[in-house]
Length: 554
Image 1 (tube, one colour):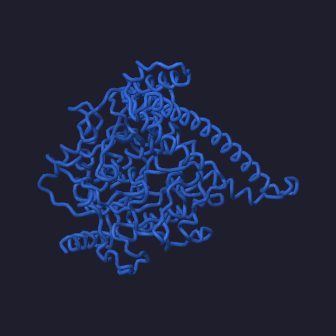
Image 2 (cartoon, helix red, strand yellow):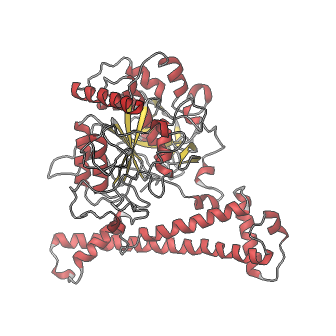
Image 3 (cartoon, one colour):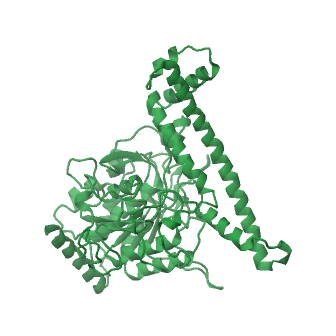
């Protein structure tokens, strides 16, 4: 699932996630210097002006595996990857990579007819549907010992989704109630728009109308928005809640839209070239953080300055499917990506092995994978967050870990005890480093911009720095880039509030490095490291850069 925080949480609770992080920060705080600016930014300005000013760079492809990227955004269109071997719109697989008209990337959750998956169920719900079929008509007493264990797990998951769905439906009825309040007030006032002053002076003998007016005025005032802005948010929340009800509906399955053989987890060639899809805000936001054009006076600046963004769509409004994630990774690797950003995750996995094999494929091909740790305020050492860098256990052997994977937690813009974002997952073994992830201003679909919180925003900070290193120091291997990013992070032993609790802990206990991402330190360290990138990967990267330049000139 795309790691995003919904508007309705801001609307209905004055202590929202955004507001709880402290006072407003500058829009560009994630670029600032921790020492001189007192914000835990990654210090890109000093990095470029002092360390990279006269150094040449090589164009690097970064794949954004997400829910969609707007390739025509004003701050991204000039840095989108354009497949040099493909001719747009001719309906032919010109480069013979198996994907027709994949100009900007590929969409693994779309059909050949151009239709796209929007909402989908959660993985736990899909597993419940699977087990319902498996155990339908069977007597529990006739099950084997292994089957009984699976059946018990099935019952546990079924109870969990039932409880979750009931909770969502209850909340949705609350929002629908507010919608009805708006209708009654509009009818009473005989106008389609009204102000908070209208509500304060409203008089009616109908108790439902006066109660609705009081509630709307209260919520809007607390959140410092107008009555009509609140209505827009409420309408959006109802729409979102409709999707969320289906998260927990075992009978909801939009996979027919894709038209693949879902039982075949190794199938590769399906989908369509529409990388934007029905909702590209999240992926476009992630892309802007990585590489929105720097210094053009438009919108905002990304972290890296010589990148091409490849959009790979496989994340619906719901949980992504392992088959699609694996294919997205393989597509990115096969088409030249040096860095892959993955700002999504889930608590259950349908087929971890197929994703593990794709991760191994990326590592074998010298590709760095960056992944968001999640927004549940949980310890990833004890809670599942898929995909991850620990391969599925086989037999009695201790599970191995991917060597070119970085797991990222989110920083608040606070240098004190609230340094770790309150929603961020953490883990002494399961999270590698923390990066800015609160009130991050970046690109959204259709030439817009917005501020989002989440480890989804922290992950592309690391992807951006990784791309910067691979661009200016192309002789470095993916493994070396990971080591540099981790070793160069700013270590901290200060006491901070542990995410998801009121407990104070040492910041160093929240991740492997106990550190915060810093581009300046990373570049300094990279300049002193002897590159170990294999010649074939170095040559491939150089060829990609030349092909991109040639395609753009044409």
